[in-house]
Amino acid sequence: MSAIRLLVLGAVRQHGRAHGYQVRNDLEYWGAHEWSNAKPGSIYHALKQMAKQGLLLAHEIAPSTAGGPPRTEYEITEAGTGEYLTLLRNYLTAYDQKPDVLTAALGFMVDLDREEVLELLEERVRAIEEWRKGVTEYYTPEEGPEQLGHIGEIMNFWVTSADTGAQWTRGLIERIRGGAYVFSGEGDPFVGVLADDDENPYATGESHPGDAG
Image 1 (cartoon, rainbow, N blue to C red):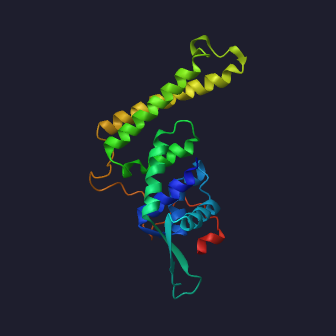
Image 2 (cartoon, one colour; image 1 turned 60 degrees about the vertical axis):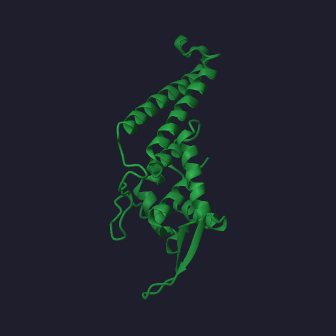
Image 3 (tube, rainbow, N blue to C red; image 1 turned 180 degrees about the horizontal axis):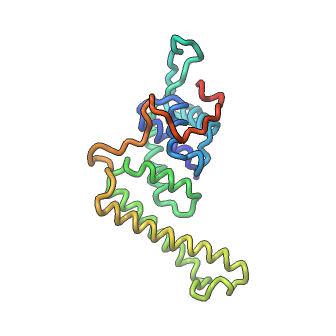
C-alpha cells in the first residue's frame, strides 16, 4: 500500500478542481513530505497516472496574460471518488502497513460518517488482537524477549507495537464516540487547506519542473 494515491485524490477532492502545484502546496502544508513519499515528483507523476486511469479529469487552462505555459487542473471523477473511498476505508483498518498509510487516512477520515469510522476502527482493533493472538501461540511476552536470544527483541518490538497501536486506536474510538470532530453529514467540516493567497509556512521552497504544469 502507498499513501500517495489517497493523499493526491483527497487533496484534489477538497478543492473540487486543483492544479498540481496546489496539490503539492496542500501536502507540504500537512507535512506529508516528511512522513510519506509525497515528494514533488511523486505528486505530479500520480496526478498524470491517475488521469490516464480515469480517476482524475485533466482540464487544460489557458496561460495567464503574463505569459507562461498553460496549467492543467485536475478534477476527481466518479471512479476516482470510488477509489478514494475504498482506499480510505482500507487504510483505516490496515494495521500491518507503514505509518504513512494510517496517517493519510486519519487526515481524511471525516469524509466518512461517524458510525462507519467507529466500525472501521473497531475492525482495526480486532485485526490487531487477532494478529497478537497468533504470535503469542509461540512467543510469551511475559517471559521476556531473552527466551529467544537477541532475536526475541524482534518479537518484543512487534508485540509492544501492536499493544500500543490497539491502545491508541481505542482512545481514538472513545474520542470520536464522545463527539469529537465534524464528520460527513454533521455540518461544516474543518478546513485543512490554504486559501490561494495564503503563504504556506511549511513549504519546502524547492523548485520542480512540474510546478509550472
